[in-house]
Image 1 (cartoon, protein in one colour):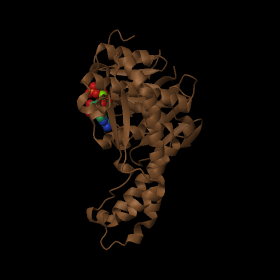
Image 2: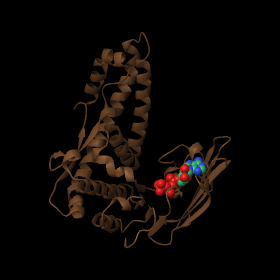
Image 3: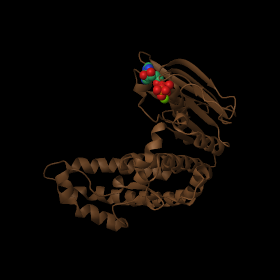
Image 4: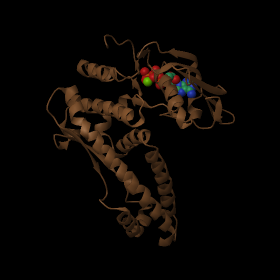
Length: 336
Ligand SMILES: Nc1ncnc2c1ncn2[C@@H]1O[C@H](COP(=O)(O)OP(=O)(O)OP(=O)(O)O)[C@@H](O)[C@H]1O
Ligand SMILES: [Mg+2]
């Protein structure tokens, strides 16, 4: 067990709430709208440093002046986060220090499984990119930093493209930067997808109990190095300034799920698709453990009700070594 308790004040609908984790598996059950996902959100706030679904002013309980979350680990370490409505100031307290952001040392890896993740196989390219970006950013600081720099540079380039009488030279430095960061992101994506693929079919088979083969394929705009990337951007000046955005690059990548070599969306059954997603979540937890050396805490938000018994059992079996916090509407029986 890793997390001992989480205390919420004025966080969403919770004026005051204490979640104590007594065992490896903690179950939170309640009616729709009773605040289950909000508790997981508070855990993510204090382990990752920010929410997975909203900005702070939306989180603070309506009418309240501040929110506060206090998370205590079993080893006695505490992380507290407070946010004040009036000043908009957020403060983390960890290791007797106050900081505006959660220091890396006090972050703890989390694998979050939301109901919407079950639709990832057939989701839009941008939703799939977001999914894998979060997955990869947790594994690598370099990925996370390249991605945020890339997104900022892309925004700047796109803003320039909307300008009248834009000269080609004005884009030069942005093209240089985007090529460097873009190729860096491609390298990481290719390598990480390869690592996932090494495990995917085996884990999938252990859940679905069959002989199917699953692969993820990263689809990119082109196979080019940094110079080639730069030339593509330069060569698209006229087209890009007409449409007002950047028509080449990693922000257009797609991840395809292949089921026995054909696209899974459309060929795999609903149950098979769910097994793929569950396999992907196990791999996420495994890779986090391998890369960061810490066993992630697994948050399962309302996913049990979406799964049949075989897949529910597979979830419990594979996350046996992790601390798991589960939410469900009503009670879930016989999950162990
Ligand atoms: N800032 C806020 N202040 C007060 N209440 C809020 C705030 N933001 C959201 N809520 C309410 O908090 C309640 C809890 O939301 P939450 O998503 O945690 O519920 P849930 O138990 O996960 O529900 P479901 O079972 O439908 O997923 C909802 O009724 C929501 O409208
Ligand atoms: Mg919920």
